[in-house]
Image (cartoon, rainbow over all chains, first blue to last red; front, side, top):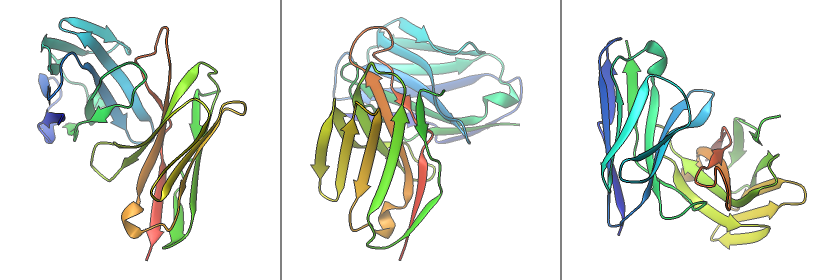
Length: 112
Length: 114
């Protein structure tokens, strides 16, 4: 069966520090991968998605970036965090377009 | 007009009640409709998935899609305290630009009181 792993679960980082969140999927090949951010009162916001290794589409201009070094690995990064980067970050995967996503357990990031 | 509108609630019902959750949308290209349940501090979990118009039933849950009205619903029968969570509707186009993306409602927070 397919599983998705996301870590860490909780992270507190100072302003200006770097960020690296990792997500891996098991039990499937060529998944579509997604990074979402969920902020209080704002719903789920798509940040990046990837349909293959090295293929990244950005939906929101910001100081975050994403990379997909391997088929089932998706990384969200920042060189310098801002206070506004605080939120609940969710990784997800899907088999095909339009299909329901499967989400990871999320990372709660607090920038102080 | 926002693409997907969902009443944030909160909605509080007694145990055993029938719950009705709804979303409206404006993009006529949407073909796939989903409902997610999200417990506090957890990732969303896919509950129901429907393609195009019609009804789908799974246990105590029924999803309805009315594309002519751009309106989708989730019904929960015999609600239980364990159903207390935030429910998110989501939808996507079947093809074309943006078809990989799900557009989410902001979620309705439901509390089922024992």
